[in-house]
Length: 333
Figure 1 (cartoon, helix red, strand yellow):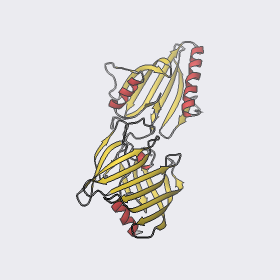
Figure 2: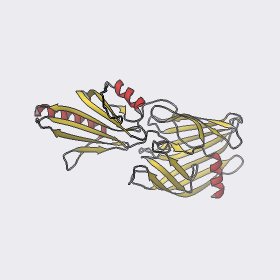
Figure 3: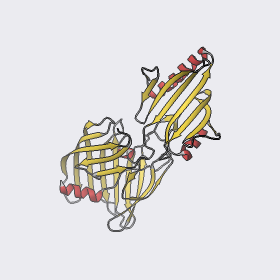
Figure 4: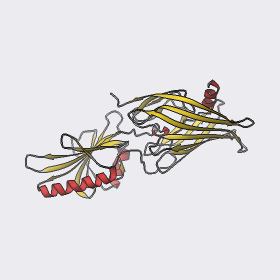
């Protein structure tokens, strides 16, 4: 096992990034608008969807106000709150109304709920009369209120529950990951740390650039020899990393990692192939996960890894590795 661990340490390439700016499916959305990022990200996307920013003296510096059509309901008021520390979008509140007539209120409430349920599935009732639903990336609540003049207002509250930077998501992890400790790691570091925004800390990757959706678009890696390797990434339609190619700019050595996922976005298979400068494959490693236990966030904490290793001039070897993970989250109590 020690020899295998050393081998994978030498071959380790942290698997995360995004090569093209495409629609982000790994975040909460409102009318297909990603609810994430700093004001330089969410203001233009909301404006592109038809919302107009409204500014007034004395506005809270952590709150942004808009007005526009909400699923066809005109003159809706939208309020975005950002995290005071990170300046990233935290939650969104949409208010429709107030309505003086019960008929218009009931009709619009039914219409909006139908729209949202077709998009997110059925909402569940709470004891306070509100309706809510939970997704992998956030929480939505519908509530109503009655003012002193007898007018009704419909309110939708969107809570963002996914980090803006997708470094952890690109490793098949969900939630506001703070730390991952893996026993018997293969092809990954034993301890990973992420900041509150979702960025991987202390990684060997340099020259990292992120796109507007929080995915890395470019990166490089300095090898132990002092040579520099560049990394290219390809993603599937679900924004899952499909292929990662590392090329040493001097030696021509190339490492290609390919990944497969299940319907829940968990990484189930990984293959690694190493090619020399003549483009001949000199090493191949295939790994398959058999997940045995998950935590409350859906991340695996117990896994049996089946590993098949081949090196030029040698016979293939197969072994099983039992792995456990301890995961800490930024938002846990």
